Image (tube, rainbow, N blue to C red; front, side, top):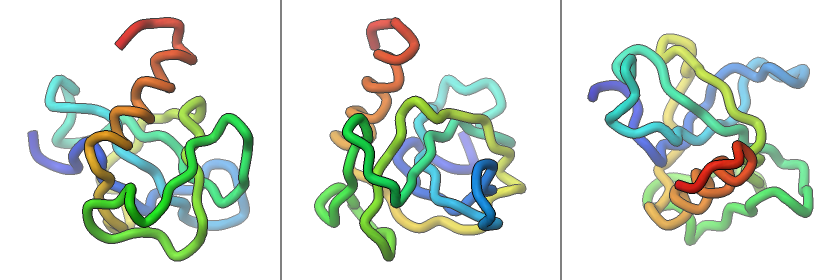
Amino acid sequence: MTGYQRGDVLKGPDFFGASRFRPWVCVHDSAHPFGDQEGIFVAITTTRRSEAIPLTDTDFQTGGLPKTSYVNPWTVTTIKHADIQSREGVLIEQTTNTIAEKLCDYLGVNC
């Protein structure tokens, strides 16, 4: 698979707010049939919600985000790689797996 990898934190389109871009975390793996062109991403926000997953500096293998941020695993979308602005960092595997598992919970499946 080429393109972005599972755990990458990327600056992509903001479908919800007035900003042009927002951070997203890539949750797909090499099984994605069009992984070289697009990916499955979960939204990252600065809005604290009790159900959101907080990100700390220790959740990042490399890079990071400039503000305190939270992952909303119920906010999932497909984004074309051509619409990604930049890579902000990479999450550690444990954090990425936690995000994917919560997403599965919202879908009603076991991962």
